[in-house]
Amino acid sequence: MDNLGIARVFTDIGDLLEIKDANPFKVRAYRNAADIVGHMAERIADLTDAEVRALPGIGKDLSAKIRELSDTGALAYYDELRQEFPPTILDLLRLQGVGPKTVAVLYAERGIATLDDLETAATEGRLRTLKGMGPKKERLLLRALAEHRTRVGRHLIGHADDVATRVIDYLRADATDTTIVAVGSLRRGCETCGDIDLLAIGTNDQLMSRFTSFPGVERVLGQGPTKSSVLLQGDVQADLRLVPDESAGAATQYFTGSKAHNIAVRDLALQRGLRLNEYGLFRVADDHPVAGASEAEIYAALGLAYVPPELRENRGEIRAAADGALPRLIERTDLKGDLHSHTTATDGHADVETMARAARDTGLEYLAITDHSQALAMANGLDEHRALAHARHIREVSARLDGITLLAGIECDIRPDGTLDLAEDCLAELDLVIASVHSAFGQAEAQMTDRILRAIASPVVDVVGHPTGRLLLRRDPYKLDIEQVLDAAARAGVAMEINSQVDRLDLSDIHARLARARGVKLVISTDAHAPAGFDLLRWGVMVARRAWAEPDDVLNTRPLEAFQASLRRHRKGASAT
Ligand code: DGT
Ligand code: CA
Ligand code: CA
Ligand code: ZN
Image (tube, rainbow, N blue to C red; front, side):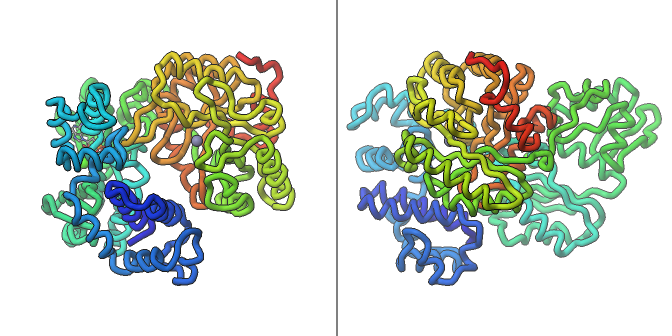
């Protein structure tokens, strides 16, 4: 079992123990272990027992459990714990606003163990009399259930990509002459994927049986000579199709989608007397093949520039391709720096120097260290005094290291009333201030909008971090008049962050495109809490590409000096509103 699998088991154990009302220290020990294992750069299976025990908060007992999981893929203690409850009970925790304490009450007092049980009980009004509940909470539960149903069966793109890579590597190891690529929503860079679509090009009699015998397959849903589907562990479905060389481009184009893009391209083809399907592009009149071996030749035969997969959503890309007006999309290699990272000073897992070296190793020229401010007490947030001491330390490390420059920044909390968590004269001493919301997510739209407008009005704020607060598949964005916020940001010269954490991707593609249209600059940041976190930049770049962003739209494509000059705090004539 890999690190993430182990982290997931420990998270479940923490939840089950809390549902059981176990000792809070024990609960915290498992959650802490989940956090540490989930954020480690090395495979924990590769560490010695002594190295595992040297990790913070991991003693003899937890290290033995880690070993049992990594060696056998199972844990007797976990299995026993799960026996005490119906297997569905953890599903309830996926609902917004439902924590282990609520689950414990629902189960003990009403016997609720499934989402369906909960829906029935809430609809019949049987929950409002429970301790700590009421008609309002009952309504919120019903809404959370409805939201949950729109999410089931989808997966974060980072997760879908990991799984797809493993399947493709496994298939390729045995089929070196066959090209295998991911298509569908994964290739388009969508924030979540319903399933994984793989396309193999060539002739290979063994490929389908090898696919269905991939070690991670839980169930084979269908197997044929050119198409098979499997359900993988973790409830991810994967489809594999095999097509001959001459249809490679047509099939790649067809199965990449989106459906809306394909329909529009097919209509355009028909207007030109051509028929497009997954086998090729043909003349309607006599079925003569016109193109099919590559995507580029298909788009060219239709009079279109090649449309990058991230733009294929029927959001104006076909007209732009016809007019030669497609953007020169930003690429990962355009980014010169990362502007959001945490260290052990707050809730990160590595010190300043380790983070700096890791950023340098991924090719970055500058990195802003932006630990939390004091309001995040749980994360050991910095007060003014510690923030300035931390800034001195960051600058010392920066002076010592070659090949990377550190910016002494902060992720300053925006309090519920819109004031900043640290004094302006302290923030003015730093090189970069990200202002973010981390509390009171339930505020009404007008209040939340004013709150963020007030932060933007402060002359020391350079960037708004993860501007909508969403957690994909878990928490909806807070209510916000995004257009009003973007207009204020444009006027003030404040940039909007695209946060690259795969469960945030916040701003979204649609909002980031709106930001560009309103004249707001973007930044793409990792929010890394560990050295491995810098790899996530690719996902932020993906969102920016889906937002039609060119390098110039994104401030951290600029070399250090030009970047600093473009920050709000150094811009001439930047106003407070
Ligand atoms: P997903 O899986 O919900 O994240 O989204 P997709 O886009 O991967 O959708 P999926 O897996 O149902 O189908 C993969 C691609 O196959 C889709 O993007 C376009 C193509 N496709 C599937 N069904 C149709 C269809 O009925 N018409 C057309 N034109 N294309 C289709
Ligand atoms: Ca798909
Ligand atoms: Ca599919
Ligand atoms: Zn944050």
